[in-house]
Amino acid sequence: VSFAGLAKASELSVQLDQALGQATVEASGIGQGRVGALLFSVDLANWFPAAASSAVSLGFSERPAVSQRFFQLRETMPPKLSASANWKTRLSLPSDKFLVEFKAADGGAWVPPGTKVPKETQWVKFTVLMDDLTTVYFQDGNKLKFHYDFGT
Image (tube, rainbow, N blue to C red; front, top):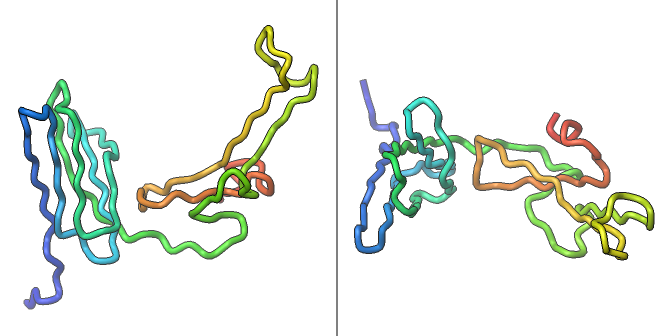
């Protein structure tokens, strides 16, 4: 059996700095072209993302948790999505066409007491895929009104 084609294993190291009052977790050896997601857990059953990187290394610092934490590194291949006019990964605010605006006319949507100014709300819909925590996909909320239409 030949193991020449196997990738080097990723490594995690944890440093506690009492003077700064923080813990630093470093991951190295993340596979080229892969995404490394640092996950934490307090019970080894439920895992939550703490940081992600598409580089070959990753660093994460935080104040020490009240209880102990466990860390693991999960490597994934980023998804290959077909190009579409309905999404993109960069915005140009405040003039981006993906920005959705709602302006209530007088007597329209609720406005806090004592205000004479119409309510104005702006938002951009977005998705972060669990297989690639390093990329945010912004949705054209003016074309697709519901998240379901974008995600399916």
